[in-house]
Image 1 (cartoon, rainbow, N blue to C red):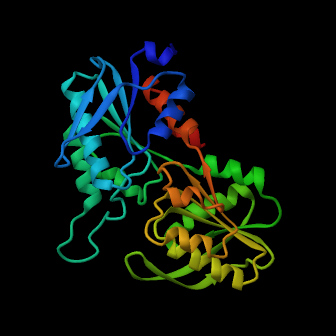
Image 2: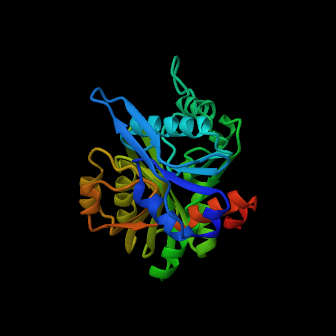
Image 3: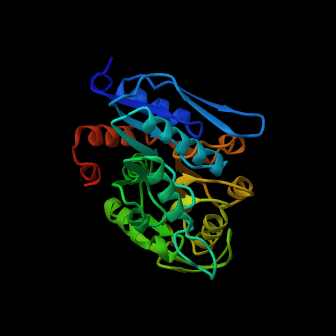
Length: 317
């Protein structure tokens, strides 16, 4: 048994991403905690924790990915179960934080859903949250408990440095991602370009123009999440039209809903790098362009440091 298991750290998983949770446990050399998620015939969930968690430091790994509401409810019920079982501290490890795109009022009479989810997690009994690449950093301020927002950058950068050479240009698919793209470009000693995007409706984007030089270069489009893949595939077309040698894409959260896979397969993208914050669906697994990078070691290190009281920020310095 590992040092962590004997010092009160226990990791549990819901049904959203058990493979990632198992990889984290393998990295920490400890078994996963026993829990059952049952469903009544009407769809109502029932949670059973199969071991003593009294006075332990509990980490629950659960992305709020599709089906979002089921996985969110699973997480809330597991947190409540641990709280009522006298756990010392409960940390919700949410690699992909659902509802993050709804972080402000964009029209009259609409909810701020990201804030509501934060309130639900806090009221359920979470003492801390570990998440990754929040769609908007200010979501951390929606919580009244500590939030560690991790970044997939070290994992993606390591892969790019290993597998790409030549004249690179990092491309932001919209103005909102420029800061992220600039940080990548600096670390890779690459140039920077920006796609000017006009969004006509939710999940519908039209790339209009490209700012920067991509001619003869290997372009890598960088985004935090890809949902229907409209933005990234439109951007790839514009980049190739401007004379790029080849174009690739990478993102932290492969939501990949609706026509995403069809668009990726028929697009100008040569490859698409994603992390396993969200497990890929069958059609995505079969797509040869998609390369999955594991964040298990990164999240495992964050869990170790949180448990010991060490700095998590130092992981990204």
